[in-house]
Amino acid sequence: MPENVSFLRNRTELGHGRTLGQSARPAWVITVLASVLIFTTVVDILGNLMVIISVLRNRKLRNAGNVFVVSLAFADLVVAFYPYPLVLYAIFHDGWSLGDTQCKVSGFLMGLSVIGSIFNITGIAINRYCYICHSFSYDKLYSYRNTLLFVALIWALTVVAIVPNFFVGSLQYDPRIFSCTFAQTVSSSYTITVVVIHFIVPIMVVTFCYLRIWILVIQVRRKVKSEVRPRLKPSDLRNFITMFVVFVLFAICWAPLNFIGLAVSINPQAVVPRIPEWLFVVSYFMAYFNSCLNAIIYGLLNQNFRKEYKRIVMSMWMPRLFFQETSRGGTEAMKSKPSPGLNNNEQMQGETL
Image 1 (spheres, rainbow, N blue to C red):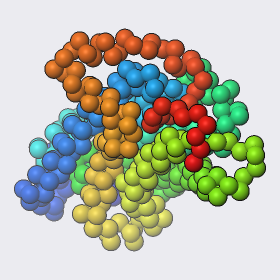
Image 2 (image 1 turned 30 degrees about the horizontal axis):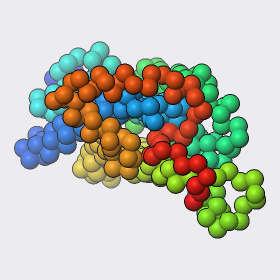
Image 3 (image 1 turned 135 degrees about the vertical axis):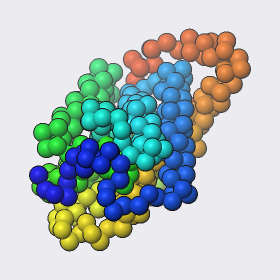
Image 4 (image 1 turned 60 degrees about the horizontal axis):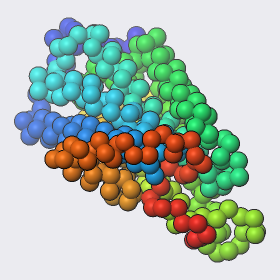
């Protein structure tokens, strides 16, 4: 094992604190990191729980497309309930003192959330692409049963993608970010594989799907398609834009960390000393921050989610309202003709862009 890799071993020898020669961070830095993570955790939990409850309560939101949205919300919740609190504990105690098992579990769940998120975002993009660009086969492809199978496949692939970390030994504590996470310097070839399969390839697939959708939108607007072209309702476009924003923000938040990992894996000895610690820390906490953004985006850009958020908040003072809303609609909406995820308004028959 390379000398600059075994963070856990260093932590054991030095009481799971910072390495020799490293001075404690200034109090304001600790305050900023803790504040960002506390805000992220609180908004992550409240926001994504409201997303899940909104889909369950609102008939208009119960459709095949939003199954992926709920799955994405679950992926974001995973880190908020376990890894983030442990990171906060390490920040306040200036080191890891919870043992190797907790570290491995925290790192596993962190990876499960990250890879689950990008795979679900990829699934959402493919769903959007099929609905808008291949609308005639959408109903059969995204039946209720098939959609659940697709989501199950996403999580099965996510678990398969995480398991190799236990054999490579890459889930380790990093004192720079107070986290048990993927160590980029364990194996150059493995890090390159992780970045390519878990980030670059999904980004390419999502980019292809959304690029094709944008091309179709432009063609429809310019009326250059044939008479058999699928009609695009304004709600379809708003739904697409909402999920496109989700994808763009994910890419922005996670790109710095992945590019740093790629650079480190290509030439560790030359690159590692040149990466400022502040840049590494900022890139990680940008990635952490992304887990609380999706619920905010839905509320800002989607009318149905925004209204449902308000109802959920109001039901805190009037619990009867919550149960009345939940009891309406049942599950028949999921069995009806699938509509694109995140229906913004009522379907407007005959209305095109």
